Length: 77
Image 1 (cartoon, rainbow, N blue to C red):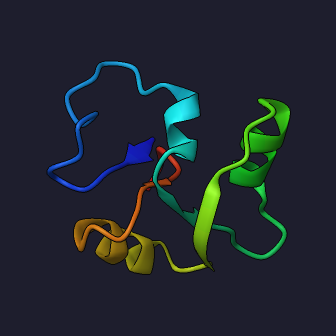
Image 2 (tube, rainbow, N blue to C red):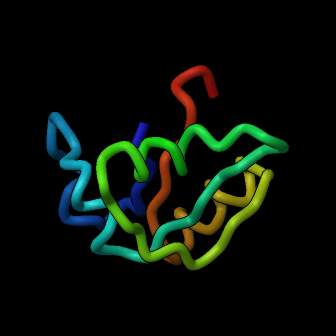
C-alpha cells in the first residue's frame, strides 16, 4: 500500500504507478531481514530516492504525514 501525504497529487488515483515511487523522497521500511519493499524495487528495476530507512512503521507514518516523503507499508498494517 502506497502511503502519501494528504496533499500529494496522486492521492486520488485508483492504482498507484510504481515508477512514481521514484519521483519523491522515499521512506523505506525494513524490519530485520524483511526486505520485501527493496525486493519490489529490485524486481521492477526501479531506484527510489531513499531518504530514510527505519524498522518503525509509526515513524514512517509520522514522516509521511509531515510531508517528508512517501512510502510503502504492508497491507496487514
